[in-house]
Amino acid sequence: MKIFSKISDTTSYIRQQKEDGKTIGFVPTMGALHDGHLALMKRAKQENDLLVVSIFVNPIQFNNKSDLDNYPRVLDKDIKLLEEIDTDVLFAPTAGEMYPEEVKKQYDFGALGDVMEGANRPGHFNGVAIVVSKLFNITIPHKAYFGEKDFQQLAIINKLVKIENIDVDIIPCEIVREKDGLAMSSRNARLTTSQREAAPFIYKVLQNAVKYAGKKSVNEIKKWVETQFKDKDEFGLEYFEISDSVDLQPITNWNETETTMGFIVVNMGNIRLIDNIRLFNNFAASNNGNK
Image 1: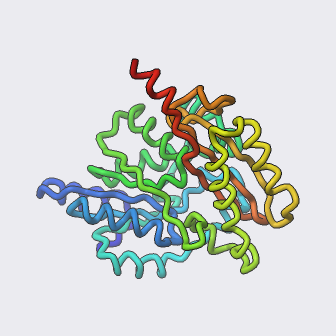
Image 2 (image 1 turned 180 degrees about the vertical axis):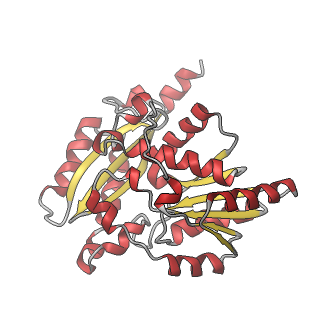
């Protein structure tokens, strides 16, 4: 595995590989790698000649300094995991290498960036878009792989690619879960033993919401989810939203859209856990749309 910390070295090497006819699969990460990351990488490895991974804790996407300071950084351990799956290239820059000057660029993602994470984490998606755009320019991949746990982020990146006219295929990959249902996340490593034991409750609530979807009203399910967390001191429900699966805008009635998703963010202490689930396929709306 070749390890680069400089942008110029990384781009030069990958450009040569592309000139030699190699296809590039890219997985951007912030490190603290887990099986969810590795699933993306194994798929990228299988579908491309070269697997390129980046590890960079991007400071400009954190609107909470404490979250940035506490984000796990275990580069030596990550490198061992990357070697085990035969990663070809690791790009692990410093913040100074990525941002030698103050970042002023501002993206407008419209309504897509105004809801859920966009509303609750001001500036977050702008920071994500800036770093992902830079990483695409550095690694010049044919395909880039992103997990659906960060579903809104995935939608933002798809829009970013159109805005910037970047020649890359964005490959969405299903959420990878622990055996008890908890969505895999680097933040899970920060959970205490008792928090980790309690955390799968989040997914259980989502699964029950699926059972009620289409039977109870949208508002009834949202209130039901809020009630589930109300008396549990270990959880702080930040939001639960039911939205269209394409434009991610909140709905108030099942007939407003063909496919619906539930999005949830729960805080356990100062650890923020995010998850989502497909709630309801509205076959009536789908059939009406095809007439």
